[in-house]
Picture 1 (tube, rainbow, N blue to C red):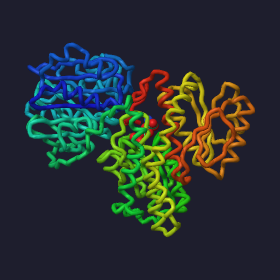
Picture 2 (tube, rainbow, N blue to C red; picture 1 turned 120 degrees about the vertical axis):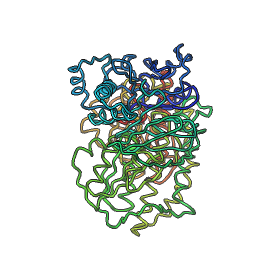
Picture 3 (cartoon, protein in one colour; picture 1 turned 90 degrees about the horizontal axis):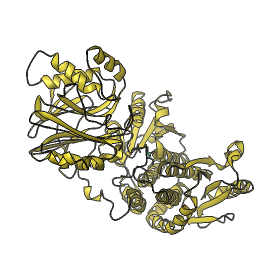
Picture 4 (cartoon, protein in one colour; picture 1 turned 60 degrees about the vertical axis):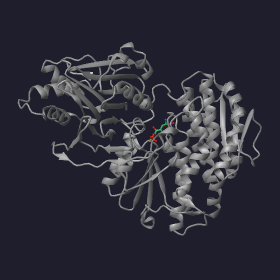
Length: 606
Ligand code: M6R
């Protein structure tokens, strides 16, 4: 994963690099480092932990260079440590490299280099890259201005895996070379400055003009010039693209954490999402030209929270369109030879649009002739550039690692597209559902008012070792998402059970120490779930119930009511108390909610 930034221009690069790294910490925060170049000398400062540790290094303020590269790491090869932090250099200090991705054949390359007299200081896969560049550079007898680029090209030809790289060299002091393969990298430009980053928000405050590097494309970047080359070093012409996102929205707006802000933004984020496809109760997706009548199987493929949104989407697609829908985890789908053909529609959901397994799953679906539709929150992200069709959730940037507003927007969009397809198929009357969508922003605001009650509940639960979640039907999906939210930010072990499955094993876990949070919004299943609650209560468990305001449930220590809505939309409301509960439990434990341990927002390695 990891985030990378670079700068070539006429300003001191350090503040720009640090600022970019702070915006990219969502990609990993195990260590951070910077390499700058001045007087033909590469200066590296790095440290374990967060970017703020780098800012606190006294020497950093002495660096006046106007060319530099920087990195924030999510550890893959080697523990989080200063030694394993990027940038990495070759043995002689001629080349410095930052890398996002994984070099799968690094052991083979390392052995080759060791046999040729090189030695290694870190446990990373990345350290082979600067040494290979050195190897190819010194073995190239032609001394022309392409020499460094040739060395980088020859190096990349040896690498297997994924990489976005920035390279500086003391032989070309005012230049950064950038290259990517299956990891994102963009270049922002204005007259006399160039900015490189893993994503747009990291550098959006400096420019709106961007180049999107394609796979295996090289960029040679100086302050006044930008040259692009294909993998054979043939010069390429590229156009800039304008990106107008409001970067001012990327702050906490007075909230203590991004996650809390994002939970509270949900009434606006789902409204922004449905306003794009629904005008005056008419739903249209003008750019989606899918012959839905010819589709006999829909696959929804995604990871984590996005996959849970897909499970909610399955309910909508199957009930409104009568098309069998399979939901799959990207990392499973890509390796299981799914049965796809031209009559299959594959929907790929990804907030970031950069999740490596989801990208690979999409490539597989395309290669088998399926129609592909991407749902993402990030314009121009890798997934949108590869899919046949793309739809966006207009949630605004989601910074907290725990996904909240993206999830509810994804469900909104999936219900929207299901209604649209069903109208094309002339299947059902969908007016009632469209009317209901319009009521959601207000109902979300009402649901958020449960917050003070949930804070109290968090004080009761924060020191528990296990918390279970229970639900049936669409409420089981909410339980799965609730369990993921809780474990990822509070580190409490939790599991979600389909209530009907309890007796088939999980009930053995229940004793008088158990806490079970039940979601019940589906009126057709309420009596079934109440029976399951009785069964766990009889075994000593304490229950908390999150339910719809019109339903009468059994007694419980805590009952939290959410407004009534249509079943297909109910996960949008019922997840909110769970999001708040996970948040307040993590706060009670004094944890960093936005940056939980071992995680990163964007999983760009498989
Ligand atoms: O960017 P994506 O939607 O593809 O990310 C997928 C998952 O990594 C993500 O939803 C993850 O599970 C979240 N941390 C959950 O809160």
